[in-house]
Length: 236
Image (tube, rainbow, N blue to C red; front, side):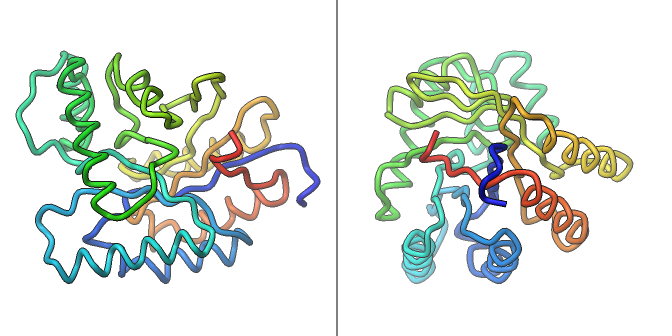
């Protein structure tokens, strides 16, 4: 299976100081099925956590990295905790995501301030400089991608992954936040994307996907293994 030219990314979103210990077994389940470690998207905000909890989170992040997982920066708090002026589209994104689209519709100054706040939280966790940034729910603003690239990170958007030198066409296969009637359509769409040769599909898993969609997700990962090989973000 590793000789196939088709490539696919596998990631697990929304890992935070609130849930890192409760999802460890779930990550191991996915790793055993996928055959290798994958990308973990970390929400870095620790401002309301105890000293003991922060220490345990730091330890777990270090262990995951040593085990071969890629540790990626996933927004700041994954929730809009401050009042900002936003574009009309940004306001709609806030409604659609229940305020999770924290970068959506921000002006240039506020976007940069929030990105720097995310980096401050990140380095407080004793992590090396992040290689990839993904905004919550992939909602951004006209300035965020260039601001991320200026920080020497790759930028993952809704339909592309960008480096300073190249743009990759990449579509996320995600089920988080979907109403029940749309879930079978999303899985059908996911299996279809795995067969298209000129894109890099992303299987983007979330804690809320389990246990409801466990069987369908297992089948999707098996399908990816049969048709492609796993790509790491660092190789883009």
